[in-house]
Length: 451
Image 1 (cartoon, rainbow, N blue to C red):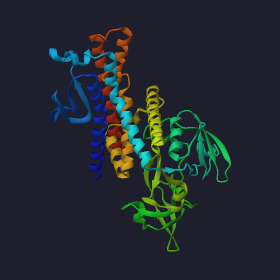
Image 2 (image 1 turned 180 degrees about the vertical axis):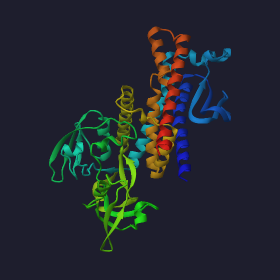
Image 3 (image 1 turned 180 degrees about the horizontal axis):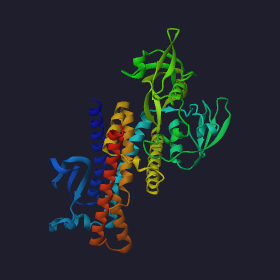
Image 4 (image 1 turned 45 degrees about the vertical axis):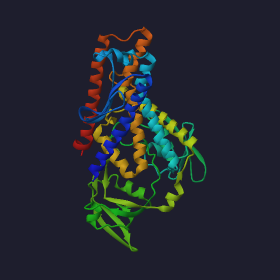
């Protein structure tokens, strides 16, 4: 069922995001008076085709669902009947050709804004940026951040929610950042930190690595036990309240996490209460890699504290104007952030392990579907932005590469030479194939070899 959900999520994501991208090119071509020969979802062998309109445009579904294309009439690709030459792509003005090329990525950004606007209007589940106690020795602890502090300002920007605060921290990754928090007594405190640049899955979450984490709303009470896990085999069950682990007193769920942090494959005593009676069991926590470190795992999940949820979270509905404004702003921020990470990959400041392929996309799509419609719509918006940004890169074969050719033509007064186009094609193919191979390699390492 889980595999089927991931496959459905992946195919739905590709179908929606890629189709919308290609429709951008299609609609722009129709507006410019350029004749469209084929609109295809996917590459490779055509599985199904049909024709529509007075031009008998061919609409097709192809075998490889990793993209799509719009084929337009072009004299550079074959003989064109005399009566259709005025409608060839190469005969269109430079401005119209550029609009047709740019319309695909533009459509992706429009789709993202529309999806994010819908989420904002339907109601966003917001969480205040109230913080967990930072790990001992972490940068956050050294900067004076304590349990219950609430982030109010990041680098001069006021933040009202955890998502806003986390985003401002992420976009500052690799650079010094100023964080202003308000403690439980209402006193403001400014902390100076540096969020490490993303370096791949083996590094862990950059924000959490500094010791900054959202307040955990779990009670130190077992809310569920994994079948065949360490806790289940030791006789622990739902409703048991953990009192001590390895001599460390447990007052909150975060204390359990800290107690298990260095206990992987080491025997520890777990003291718990059940029906008012204190009991002790000896266990050896299983090992698991989290945030780049080996930690102990009992196979239990916590019981949510409703009072804390009520205190720190709320659903916010935005009006049409505010919803659209926030969506446009987030789309811009995500686009800039994507370019920033790409730049850091080129300079070695961020790891190329951050590049993901279809396996990772299917995994994330499945997870977002499981989280509900809002989660999946948000995932679609993120992928649409990524596709838009990627296609605007000045790489031959991508839309940005064609826009680069158009820029050359605008400056020189004539289109690039055949030789320049041939070399550009080779460079573009090399880049795209290399990127795909790297993405597949990262997926295989992450989901198969790494497990």
